[in-house]
Length: 368
Image (cartoon, rainbow, N blue to C red; front, side, top):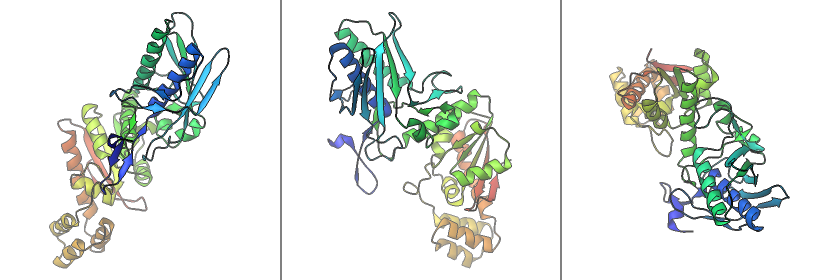
C-alpha cells in the first residue's frame, strides 16, 4: 500500500483508505461482463476510478448459468467506521433486448427510490449517478473490445442489505428495501464522514422536493426528540445533522428553506456559539474562558467566573451557572444562532436554536 492510500488523523496515526460501494459494484460488473463475453472471470479485476486511479479487487463470489453471470466483491472500507464495511456487493448481468442499452435494477438488499428530491427519479434503484457512469463506461469499453452491442441488464444486490440500511438515512430519505450504491470518487477516506454529509444534503433535497419550508437539524436522538415534542412537522423535516452543522448550513445557503431549527446538547451548542462548524470532540473543543466571560457578562460574581474557568467540562460550567440561576444556555443559544445566521448569509432563512440537557429538556432557546 502506498502513502497515498493512507490518511493521518490528528494523533499522527496512519489510517487505511477503502473503496465505495460504487467502486465495488463497478468491479463486480466488469468481471461478470468479462465472463459473459469471454468465458472467464477477471480476477483480480482492475477498474478506473473518476480520479484516474486503477485499483484491483479480488472476487469473493462467482456464479453463472445460461442466462446470467454473477460476480461479487466484499467491500473494504479501510479504517473508516462504515456500516457497509464487509458487505458483499454482487452484480448479476444478462443480455438485454437489442437496442435497449444498459439498464440498472435493484437486487435483494439494494434500495428503491420512493420520494422526490434525490438525484434519481422515483422508482429507480438506489444506484447513484457516478457509480452508474463508472459501470456504463466499463461495460461499453468491454463490449467495444468484443465488437458487440452494450445491451446489458445490470442487477446490483447486497445480501443483508435491508438490515444494513436500517443503520443509515435510507428509510428517512424514502429509499426502501436496502442500501444505496454510492461514491463520487470511488475512494473512502477514513473519518471524512462524507457519506453522512451526503445524507444530510439528500435529506434537504427530499424536504424541499416535498414542499417543506421548515427543517430541523439535530445533533443526536435526545435533541431530536426534544425538538419533535414542540413541533408538528412531517418525518422528512428531521435531519440527523450529527456534528456537521457546517455541512447542513452551507448546503442550506445554496438550497434554502424558509426556516431551520437547530437542536443540540449544551456542549455542542457551545462549540457552534464559538464559531465551530464541526462539533465533533476530536475536531473542536469548548473554550471555558469564553464561557467564563459570558458568565461575567450575565452578572456572575468573580468567584463564579473563576469556578467556570476551572470547570472540568462545559456541562460542569452549566451546572455552576444554574446554581446561581444565570441564563447561560439562553446566551449560548443566542450566540449559536448568530453563527448560523452568518453562515447562511445572505439568505433570509429564519433560525431557531434549541439547547437541551442530557435528560432531553430544552434549557435554552433563541429565535422566534
